[in-house]
Amino acid sequence: MTHPLDPPADPFEVARRAADDIASLTGVERHDIAVTLGSGWGKAADLIGETVATVPATEVTGFSRPALEGHVGTLRSVRTAQGRHVLVIGARTHYYEGHGVRRVVHSVRTAAASGATTMVLTNGAGGIRETWAPGQPVLISDHINLTADTPLEGATFIDMTDLYSARLRAVAREVDPTLDEGVYCQFRGPQYETPAEVRMARAIGGDIVGMSTALEAIAARQAGMEVLGFSLITNLAAGISPTPLSHEEVIEAGREAEGRISRLLADVIGRVAS
Image (cartoon, rainbow, N blue to C red; front, top):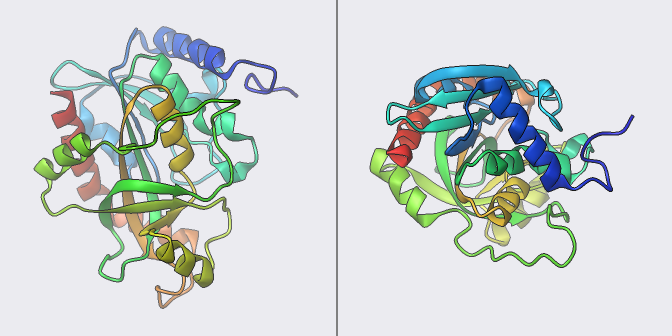
């Protein structure tokens, strides 16, 4: 069975069709900000503002049902107190699902086609710094793409300088001056990183390890969006953590931290929307 994003389809045309679907299903013609909710961040949608509409992602062209527990599988249109419209994406396709990069970044391209000029990307990830603790939110200052893949096709040369907006990170620190920041390393997954891979990530400048976000951020930059990234440190990475890693640990850390980090994220989005 073919998928709308399979070659030779134009992924940007598919994104425009998806944006039209969202406008029709939500009654909101244009969204100003988009946010992808990763593991642990799901409650933020309830705090951003008034929910105008919630639709199953599978009703929108090109979207698939999430494969991972912790992702809600919906697209939600939220109106902030300032009257701005936020597209909340609870349906993330991960690279390790094997569907190809077009489907990984389809949500970002759809957000751009919906009018969003700011893309907020969140995730649950492993921390390399021993001073970080599970449940701690960290700003992403830069990334290292270790997937050996890219959403860019052909001779498409996009500048990655200041990919994770210094302006937006400053806004986030106005909300919470204690926020630390670090470099995110996206591995292919789905296996967790080995202790040797974590040492490699640290040696090349990484502070956070995970399986999402970098490819999405590249697509957002290509679309001309301003990007803000947050990682919830759900565990210390392999070789640093004294215990074996598990997805249950990630989910539990997200549950314990979700109230605090969701309020943080909602407050940051409110500041950005003002």
